[in-house]
Length: 306
Ligand code: GLN
Image 1 (cartoon, rainbow, N blue to C red):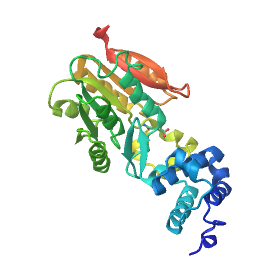
Image 2 (spheres, protein in one colour; image 1 turned 90 degrees about the vertical axis):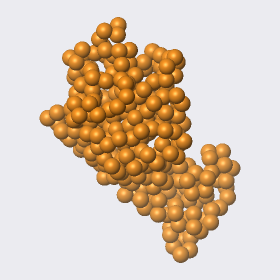
Image 3 (cartoon, protein in one colour; image 1 turned 180 degrees about the vertical axis):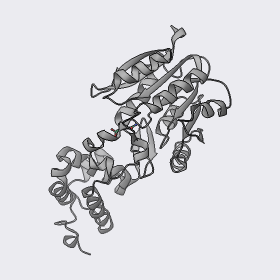
Image 4 (cartoon, protein in one colour; image 1 turned 135 degrees about the vertical axis):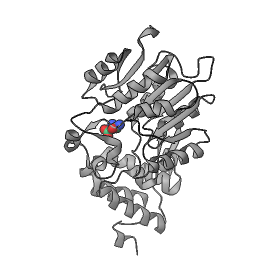
């Protein structure tokens, strides 16, 4: 197949850009298309941002052109660019992703950074004398668990998920990032069983980004999410949208160390009910906003810790 047969005017990088913008700007907006192109050039050619700028007036070979052509077709079908290239960057880690797991979100990365530097909890993760014990409930790709393990080399980190598919991805992510995380299969909603089965002491940090989007919110979501990402990682029934937070709160009563923290990502449309839930369980809890100024995180401690 020659260059024009697959839609490009030539094999010049600038013509690839023109083709992408003509095909995808209406769907995604110009800036997002430019960001996707950077991501694809990094994956297919190893170009970082600087190399991309340097190579912009150059050309690419036929096999790369073919890959770029296929990628454009997939983007047109709303497949997330992270699934196309097979990875995403998250809090200093390269995280392998595919349709089995959610693409890590920037707000989740913000939560991890807030835990590591202490801006969410008030004390940096590695600042305490003794190595922290951490558990990540509904770990998915393992991005939170892996990033925390990488940021705090002494920590003991456990990741829990119901899905064997997720656990396979999470284990690969730990191995690829050179960290030890114990990934175990459990149903977080069966919190009593979970609390009883976890060996070792209490946890100094219980972290979770559980499914929290209400079924009724599905229609307002973008097609790259609803058509491609795993529904089980996203949606909760309208009748009980806080089910995972109840399980996390309950687990914390049994297994959070006396001065430990629970940190969770939440649905921006349910901040007060979620905060109230933690308070009803006896925690001292606070609400925190994300970089988009949406109520997004809750930090909870045992009531007696203050
Ligand atoms: N914030 C994610 C989204 O809007 C949802 C993540 C989750 O359900 N935990 O797609």
